[in-house]
Amino acid sequence: MAAARPAARRSEAERATAAVPNKRADPAGRLAGAGIYVRLFARLIKFEHTIFALPFAYAGAFLAEARIPGFWAMLWITVAMVGARSLAMALNRLLDARIDALNPRTEGREIPSGRLSRAEVWVFAVLSLSVLVLATFQLPAITRYLWPLVVAPFVIYPFTKRWTWLCHLVLGATIGLGPVGAWVAVTGQVTWQPFLLGGAVALWIAGFDVIYACMDIEFDREHGIHSIPADFGLGAALWATRLCHLASLGLLAALGVVLARGPVFLVGVAVCGILLFYENWILRTRDLTKVDFAFQTMNSVVSVVFFVFTTVSVLVE
Image 1 (cartoon, rainbow, N blue to C red):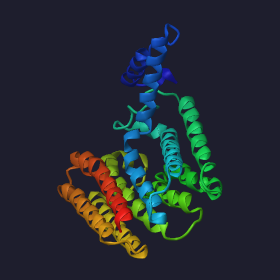
Image 2: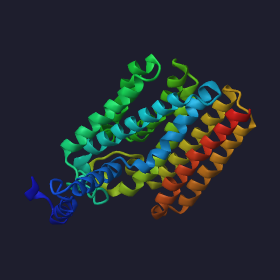
Image 3: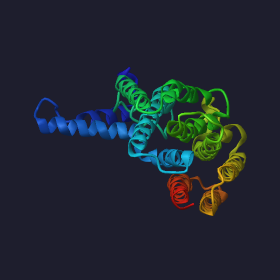
Image 4: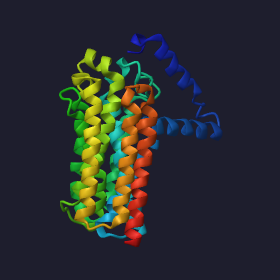
């Protein structure tokens, strides 16, 4: 109930509500109000983090047939990825809203703060699912039957942190399925090779998520939320991340060998290895104030670097 909200949070929501112009007043007000909601939903799904997933999905599409697919295939792969990621983030925020409201680090998120209602986010989630399904009907027929397998981890992941520290791997799988889906969207069939890339992405994201969870160790322990940092400590978390990233690089190298990619691709994997080493080296002192730079900024660089080297490899080798 609104009366039970902390005063600080209620005032924040009231300020956000007050900031929305009167939509009936004039067309400019309606446009301004729409702009505010666009920004709220962009923040809800952290749209800027799409760069983590899209380059690997594109790389999967390029590697599937060792060429750059046509315009329409890439367009609909992009639409599917944006719809899937928007759905995943919306479901995560909805299913974690109660926990987010209790955590000082996340209580300012859109649902706990009251800037977006649950009903609004549910509508957004349904629309995102519709966009994903629409995209699958523009791609090979197999994709329209497989999309539920992609969506299932979106629903499962928020609950796994209530049960097990393996939640990091489940989160990784939700993003790792992206390049697998892009591969299937290009070839029209499911083979085992794209799962090397999907597994590499899953381990890369899982390693990042382990470190990200370090910022909530005390809260998670107090509220029974499971993670490697909360269950095993910061030292174990750092080593888990290193092992995940090492295994991720191993799968990328194996993918290059299996697909008989040339030296450009393998150099790209090596450069990604250097970047991942640097990420982990930054946090060797266990200074969590560096998490944003080490794992959000640098991870964007890693995904773009891998995509660039993959593209060059496809074009020249």
